[in-house]
Image 1 (tube, rainbow, N blue to C red):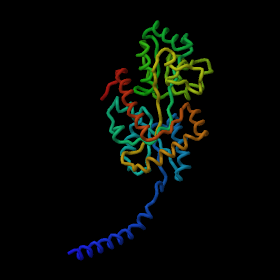
Image 2 (cartoon, helix red, strand yellow; image 1 turned 90 degrees about the vertical axis):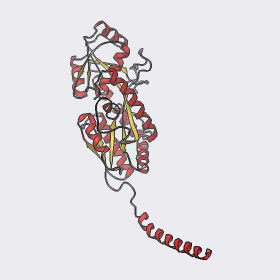
Image 3 (tube, rainbow, N blue to C red; image 1 turned 30 degrees about the vertical axis):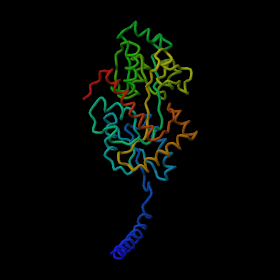
Image 4 (cartoon, rainbow, N blue to C red; image 1 turned 180 degrees about the horizontal axis):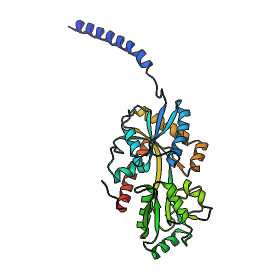
Length: 329
């Protein structure tokens, strides 16, 4: 009996070796990713902060990955069109998403979306974050945050603040601040930051929380004053402007970010390869300098770290949406 079993084991062993020999050429020919151009989907129109960060990142990734990374803008529905597109794309690494924090952490909180930010995406790496700066019209007789709050309280309900759209970070950040400061202002919603800045310059609105890159060029023109920064640390580009936390509101912090995510199911090897490429790019002095020009603080973190940020922001902005009385569908 033992002789028969031994013979069978030998035959099976020979067969297994034969199959392995046949499989080796196939394994050896398995192509390494990437083998064709990669699409980096942007949820907004060209020209904004997210688009600028995406194009800068795509340029660096093309160099390190050895394949062209094409930026494709899919604007509409506050970013939901692009998010839906990426969520439904094959998880093969050839479609990536330059996510903006409002699209993943705010939009699903205030309206029904087809995508779920935690279920449908795998965080890859957070490229960079930027605080918002609080700017006021020069028509307001205030030189700092404390003076502005005092003036707003004396003119309760008579002042307006602008935003780039209802439910945007430029809407919810001031909502959180007004709640902390216990002042009442009227919200004026615009279709983007450009029109909001224009009316701030024109004096039609008295306050706007916007990106440094869109407000800094106007700071020396005499029509607006930048009086506060929404991060816990001062912005390197305007070191003389105190944070809101320094200005009497300890712990106040609102940031937005742009980071790469991939469809759920994308192989971990691809996720880690892209994350490493982002981290390498963001570590370069030239890349960091160009991000700073956009008002962005470079990050380049790991998938695990980015995942923690996303989860924390979903909680934070759900609170802000509730404070703003935005209806959740």
